[in-house]
Length: 493
Picture (cartoon, rainbow, N blue to C red):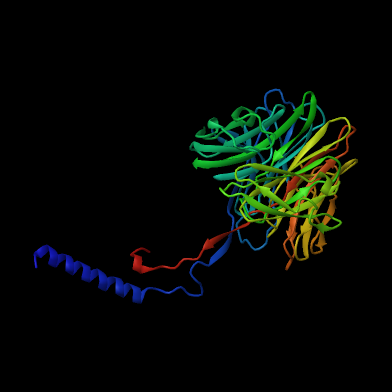
């Protein structure tokens, strides 16, 4: 045998013996199974609230933030701020005084492309930021509310359009120190739209890009937007405003939808007159067969004539539920043989032709506390919590917090109540807190069945009600971290 072959054989023998010894003597995990995760509290949180105004808009935008009181985090005292995003970073405008103490800032038009809300340590778990505006007249007439999204890499939006009179804007905001590259895909009722200007979009560091759907690909009445970040990360949002000639048809934020799934539940169909539509998209290559169940405060039923909906792959499917709901609040539970995204498109209007727009989306059932801000009461204004238990009975605890001050004051002590939701039913709960905007924290009860939640705000008006809807998601308070154990067989520690 030649010398190189002998040497190679010796090396292999040593490796086999070493690896075998390491395998036999490797440390075993104590008290943990491979792959089991631990829950640890969030220690850093951020969200971006893009400014929806364009040159000439003179309405105000209020940015609000709240960290709910979360037990068992063991975190040291932290900070949370509302700031203005600038080319050099974030300029602090207000501080959140502490857990359960709402803070609010009115952003000045043109000062910054977005507000940045950031929290650390004890003020990070569950940190929630929202933006609200109220425009009583003109092209932008309507109530608007939107959850400020944390930076991410993948977003779905079910709502908006690109026909004449529709001004649907995709706002891409980058708070990081490096540019981000994004692809924006738009689907319509006739399939995926040709929108080459939406691909390879570069969003500068500490900057923003705004894309109008009517400029990307005009002519679609109903759209679904998919934002995919190819490099970096950012926050995406969609704002919709519509007019019919000189008649305002409403404005609002289109919420971020849940990832495509086979059993989405869309809650937040608002009560009152007007049109109510369900919007679906199957992003995969196979058409879907979708079964519907509607739940209202009165009953749970399968809608006659709309028991089964066929949704074509890559095409936006719209299902008119105006007569099915007949002016009632409602939730729609879907069962599909293919993953899909789903949302609600609503118009609340009167005889004058004036209306307001609102959007809701499929969200998971509550698995922990969630905060909802910008609730209002007073003469002609109603804030309502809509709770649905599609299967087993459930319960939630609702704590309302006083509005606080523009400078982040403490506000009043929370008022707490427990609400029971019978199985296969919906319960509507008025939120009371006065005319000053106030916050509420909704938490599922111990042993509760799945409960889906939404908040509606309606304001009486001579032309048509002003309305906005928010589908509630569980706040991000804890994250799962895989348990690991040393394995010397890898040669790494």
